[in-house]
Length: 282
Ligand SMILES: C[S@@+](CC[C@H](N)C(=O)[O-])C[C@H]1O[C@@H](n2cnc3c(N)ncnc32)[C@H](O)[C@@H]1O
Image 1 (cartoon, rainbow, N blue to C red):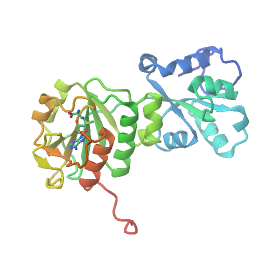
Image 2: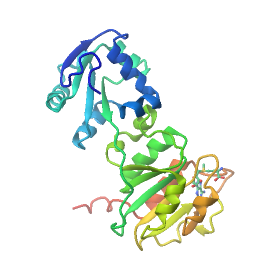
Image 3: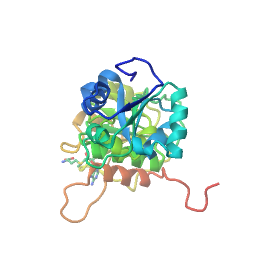
């Protein structure tokens, strides 16, 4: 976002008023319609800003509390960001609280450009795993799945149908920085069902009425699409029919189902998309 007052990037502004128009426009990014209109989102905390920077994401505006101005790490980032045209806002803690709607806000925030990827090409490595999420509703689940996908080494996530926004503050927080390392694609269900026809590997859906135990499927034969159902309704028939296998994670106790993010983690680590055992990495 260029500064709405001056329209000139790469400048440093000191702001202490919560009614400053720039602050109001950043605060308005809590609404999806405003994020979509601007194509940006808000990331909070030094770790996320560093992750974004290291992964080459564009930071439109860097915002930090004035008491951080002598922090070495921040000064280095701010200097590099300014060269790339990032606006720098040095603000009061009250302004940060207003933007994040939190009493104890992070001391550093960034307004970033959203990135949406194209669907993966068919020329994929045999060990590729893409996660397909059907109408995921909960931003905490989505953020946790992005984080888990990153940790398990999955190649990316395809959001199918009406989903929660991966760029909401809650989802971004839950990714703990993995949003900058996991490609995210979105498609309608109709487009996904059509696109899936040229997928060169297997399509494994998880389903409470799955015919196979998730541990008996061989996931090593080629790239895999792992399809996970909506939190309330599970997989609709159209998506279940698009799968080669429907698998069940057997459960004890009285729970009807696993949480979506937990089920995704169980599947990913079962599929062998894990780092080599500790101590054997080269
Ligand atoms: C919270 S569950 C959905 C529960 C929903 N009431 C239903 O009937 O499917 C969300 C998704 O996680 C996956 N899941 C959760 N527990 C599972 C299990 N035990 N076996 C297979 N998949 C599971 C499925 O993809 C499911 O659609």
